Amino acid sequence: MPAGIVLALGGGGARGFAHLGVLEVLAANRIPVAGMVGTSMGAVVAALVGAGTPLDYLEKLATAFPWAELLDLNLSGLGLVGGDKILAVLELLCKGKSFAELTPPVWVVATDLDRGVPVVFKEGKVAPAVRASISVPGVFAPFRWEGRTLVDGGVLAGVPVDIARQMGRPVVAVDVGFEFVRRRVRHFLDVAFKVINIMGSELDRRQTALADLVIRPAVGHIGSAQFEAAAECLAAGRRAAEEALPSLLALAGKTGPEFFTSLPPTTSRNVYKP
Image (cartoon, rainbow, N blue to C red):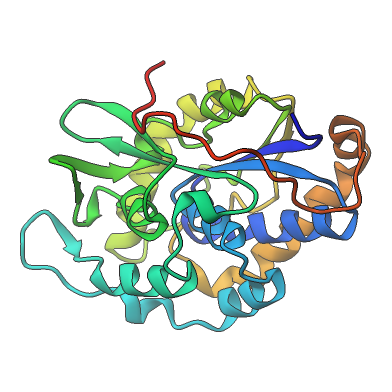
């Protein structure tokens, strides 16, 4: 098993841009990453980085991209946003890759709405899996996959530590969780994201307790739909990772000069059964 850590990247909408700041610090200090497991925005970041998209490009994209233009209204009655535009952008940024082509290995977590169990994507095309993982109930239409109805992975695994442990390396959880601040909701996205955050807060606490190290960027005051706060989230991620750097170095063992360390492709089944 190669040296390095496994990252469990949690969901949080716009707050998830903090993951990029954390990854920037890991790269600057050549801390090897043996794998990444992501939920929702954590899945987006893990997939794009694993596909080889440069961190500096992703940071520029986070702060400059007109995210609102991806919200294609949906008339199916299953969600306000259809998700086709987002899927097209994900296909482009993931370069059409499959999971077997990602370095380091990436797993993406969604939720089976009919069975009430997590679904872990480890093979097949990456972009559809990420589209499933970001499907916030009521906001995005659920994603249909092999006869299943999939929604946001954060419903059951907001910070997917227990799943990340299956990669067999020390797990560093990056929790971009929500603080219950007294801030008025601005629109339907705020309402939906806030409900998800409230419902998942206890699950997230249980998950992060299983990690070898938890990094918590100070982004809890930022709403999940506040994409205009991307620069603030990036900076908070950098600060949190720099503060945790001694622990990160000790945990990783820092045995190699490379940022990412490859693992053999997995052939495990897609459905995670605890």
